[in-house]
Length: 294
Image 1 (tube, rainbow, N blue to C red):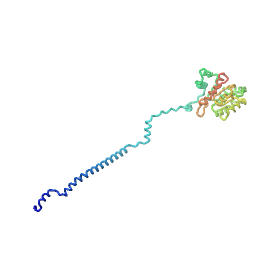
Image 2 (tube, rainbow, N blue to C red):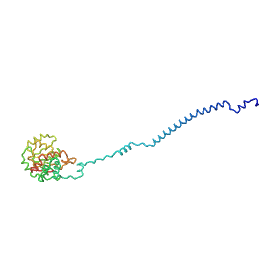
Image 3 (cartoon, rainbow, N blue to C red):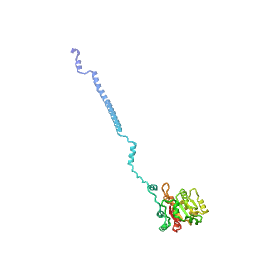
Image 4 (tube, helix red, strand yellow):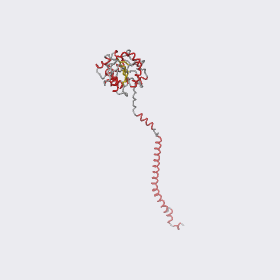
C-alpha cells in the first residue's frame, strides 16, 4: 500500500495543503489591514468619550455656579461706589419758631438790624449816624395789645394832634406792614382809635401809584397804612412827604402762615431798610418823629 502511494505521499504528508497555505498567508495580511481600522475606531471612540466627558464637566460646572440675582449685583455695585455725604438740612425760621415761644421785639432788635444791614454799605462815621437814642423810640408791644389799644397807649393826645394836622400829601401816623391783606386787617383794627381821622391804604396791589398821589394831594390824610415798598416809592416820587410825620409804627411782631415776620422776608426787609434810610431815621434823630414796634 505504501508502494502504491509512491514517494509523493510521504513528501506531502508532513506539508500543509496549498489551500491552507494560501489561507494562512491571507490571514496575516487581513489582520494587518484590520488593525489600523480597529485602532482608528478605538481612537474615535476615545475622542468621543473625552468630548462627552468634557461637555458633561462643563455642564456640571455651569450648574455648580449659582446665578447672581440682579438685586445682589446692584447692591455689590453700590457697596463698591463711594458713599455720598448727606447735606444737613438747614433749619428754617418756621422750624425754629414752631418749637419756641414768640418773643416781642424791642428797640435793640431794630437797632441791631439797621447796624447789620448797613455795616458793609456805610463808612464808620456814617454808621454812627444811624445809631438812635432811646428817646427816639415809643414803647414796644408786649404781644397783649391790639393796634388800637397800642396806639392809645403811645399816642394819648391823638385827638388834639389830628385836629392840628392841615398839611396835604402827608400823614401824621404811618403804619408799616408786610402785605396788602395785612394792611386791610390793620385798618379794621384802627376803628376805635382813629375817631374822625382819615386813613389811606398805601400798597401796590390793584392800586396805581398815580392814584395814591392824587388822593394824598386832594385832601388831608391823617393815617397811612401800607407796605414799605409802596411807601418808599411814594416818597421818591414826592407824592408823600415826611414833614408832618410824628409816629412810625412797624408791624414787627406779626407773623404770616410760615411764621415769618416782616423783617424775615428778604425783599420786604430790603424795602424797609430803604424806607428807614429815605428820611425816617433822620426825622427820628431830629426828634421830629418816633419809632414804635407793634
